[in-house]
Length: 342
Image (tube, rainbow, N blue to C red; front, top):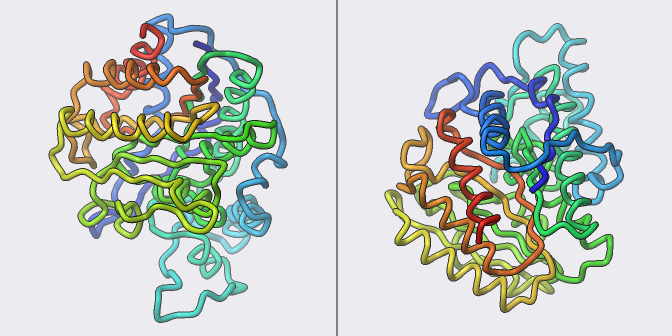
């Protein structure tokens, strides 16, 4: 299995995030991708390639131009104002306010964000842009006939909507890749999100469409981030009705419950008649993850990979979350090896 990877992810290294009422060092840090890359090489999973540059056009198929313009220019504007440290939002257009577009940088940042977990630094745009190119390069590998490919993306993407960043995510790598499949002639694409946190951005992007099926197994949003999306009764709207399936699970769930949800999701994917599968590969379901509450162990990820392989679909794996840094490489590569050996 080929892996696509860019060193540009090191350009994004936020100093802090707002979590649990405190500004804390970011859990999403460069060492995450470094450990996965080391494990890919140690296990001789396959060659590691730098991405091609497909430009902005495929990114603009998912994200609005005003949002991209804002994101690309935010750091320069912050520096011109004499800003110090990371750029983080501190106000949002909540329900009692108007969804206006202010002229002020901080007002616009609040408009384009949904939390304080996506700091913008000097290198954030380039890192996110390169992560999208990593996803597109791995997608091109599948489009050319490969059975599977791995996009080692960082920063992750599944919380980013068309014009909203948050949850460590800026550009939605999985959605960008899924759209590329559609644009190249695939009629039905399935996305399986196995991250501990619901892929709210991906769901929102495709919620009214029938050409992309979204399935997600995640912590119950009644008690877990992102709280306001990811419930079981969200089934899609309009043309997308019946093309969205969420499997929220209780805190403390182990492989028995998680694997049963995976079986249901895989059955939905098979019934849908997907031609290709995109997996949002988060491994923060691990029992020792510092910000998640599931109890999967490292061998469970081999089982996960085997079940995904049983779908018999060309499969693009895109790296999402996972914050137990020492174990992230083992767990992510276990999924890939389980898939390869099935």
